[in-house]
Image (cartoon, rainbow, N blue to C red; front, side):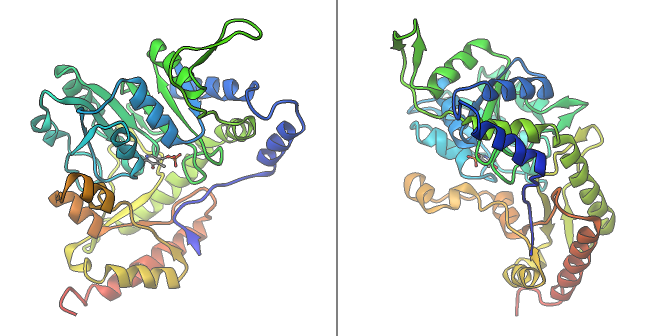
Length: 375
Ligand SMILES: *Cc1c(COP(=O)(O)O)cnc(C)c1O
């Protein structure tokens, strides 16, 4: 089975990890800081604070920005649950904004959701395609809101040659195994705000500052959300390869774009001319006549060796959210869930694999096009 995404670990990655295991520090050594510096250089931001997951990075960020009970957060339902979970954990309420057919938040629907309780806009660069950061940022500024980017899909994505990570007040990346590059589990917040970065570092490690050798003082509430040196060493080795990984995914995605151009049964995600996408996922959006047989299509693709997946069930459709906030429904997001399939696209695939995926996908889709919904 060719998975929809997977990591690529090479011998030098393994050597880098083995070196740390032989060293004196498995945690709280020099590698975390080194990786933070590399991330700052790569993204073009002043501060980077590493965490042991993208989820803990989100929690630390929302918390450090003062998001609390009674606040409303405008966000997209087409994301991994963590985007909303971590502010709901602080007592804030999600205000869902509908998406566009590319899976990204519809920037034209945000303004009418803003009220006196609104505290932040949280965007997600779905599959690696940048959202309309200019418009969302202007909106946040106009209403004095925080603008946060959950860019867990989008490390390496760009607008006009500028990397994702420099558009929002703060941006979160994930280094989970299948994200653009990996530390196993891991994540970070990048921001140009020095004060915020200091708060995040305190939050990451018990809220403790060291005054002298033995006199450590806990000055604010904190957790242990630290990344290990083992993970950071893997990240330092991997980040050197991230451009190569992205180029490989772009090669595969461009090949699919060409093969699938103007297809009558589905859409693909269009990356604008001034954008670059990390191509974390290759989402395909099926026409409505394929909604009913979608489960059969997925089963048949699995049987033929394509590890396709669906991204995402709208967050408001999860039981926890229904119980806590009631039934909710957005037309495009609901449809997107019925339509979307992510097909394999990652740096471990060969172009022969890509050809096999495209051939098999087209064969199966065309077979089911005659079934419709009445079957
Ligand atoms: C992966 C992901 C997260 C969570 O990151 P972890 O490192 O797995 O905790 C959050 N948001 C989005 C959009 C993600 O894809």
